[in-house]
Amino acid sequence: MAISFPDRRGLQREGDTRWTARMSASRVLYLFGSAAPPVLNIAGVIERAQADGWDVCLGLTPTAARWLDGGLPALEELTGHPVRSQYKLPWEPDVWPPADAAVLAPATFNTINQWALGITEKFIVGFVAEATGKGIPTVTMPCVNAAYAHHTQFDTSVATLRAMGVRVLYGEGGFVPNKPGQGRPENYPWHLALNAASIASSEGNADRP
Image (cartoon, rainbow, N blue to C red):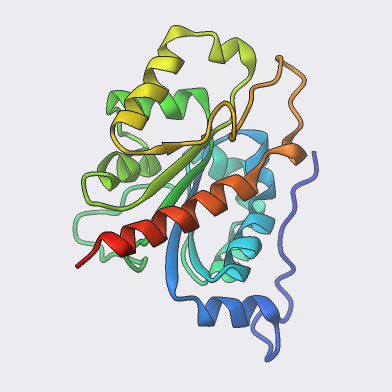
């Protein structure tokens, strides 16, 4: 499968729409991706989010970062922020602005279960595990095949996350699993995740004094 990366040439030229969108963004979205095929199209998702007024910070699982290794410099230039896949060291400063919302998509079977069970050795899972407790609106959209979804732990994990206040886009109105080997990454409904993040962020701001 081809990996789509942004063109780094002239990204900061005056009049470049991506640069303009990034500079005028008023909301910060933490976009987290794990190692499922739709993550290979993450550059286009970032551009779509920027066009919607988000300042996007990209975080990846270590495996997803390896998948995208050759394009990480271009993704950092596109977002204007370091791409993170590891926890920072205790003495290191935060390199991202505070989040207004977080989206974890695609979320693999492993990532969903680790999150629900509180297993946080991965940076992105650690962040979202804390996010609801910090009042950060959080959305996730799984990417699993029907064989994984048949495992009883998966439904338990989805229910656990929903009970915590996470918006899990799974089933009707979200991601619907395919049979093993029949996935279509190009049909992954990214727009649902971005729409849910916008709604969650707006509701979160409305609840603030």
